[in-house]
Image (tube, one colour):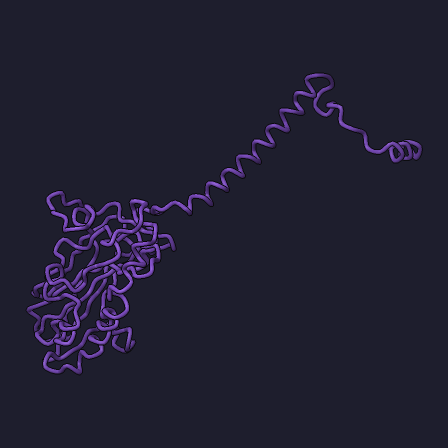
Length: 292
């Protein structure tokens, strides 16, 4: 036994001659087949990894319908949400039309939105970014929302003049902004197609022909109008974190309000985002307490 060990140590390990498969020509063939399969698996794995990495460089949306690039389902929210400046309000919009102080914080929030998000000062930076749905440099209609255009948003156009006048709060007809959150990399592929819509000057077809519409309801008999009436444009999606990008929105104008509490429920008319990740309905509650 000791002699055999000494002999192996002196001669070193025995080289493979194909006998682990079968001796002879067939054994050598099987060795090459084995090595070929191993190399093919390695090559396939490397190619798969490279394709995954390269897919992140393509200038087009990677997620359609439900879900976004950062995870989660786009959720409907409203502005101005009083919970931003006082959590004790429990998101209830409480105001007295004859008292500007009662809705001053709401106007401050609107001024912040106009100054920081809808000022149209960085549109050129936004349009220079690749990543629009078409894969070409971002179209101006993707970046700029024309938030102050009364032809689009009516009396709820987001202008400094309208804000100083109270955005309808002083006349018992408040304007409420509806937007979607968590939209990074998301494209609404199941939006409503409106073939009879006419596109405006200098915008792409999707801006007017494919829309995301919203529905709002209230138990009390009040009047509600949404501007634009056909909802927001799909042309503004996907959002790729472009500098100067203006998030799309619609304005809800509420009228015929009576003294007391009113509850309004709004939701997007898209099947792909009808439910949130927790399986609850994608709906926002807007509570308005009108004090006379």
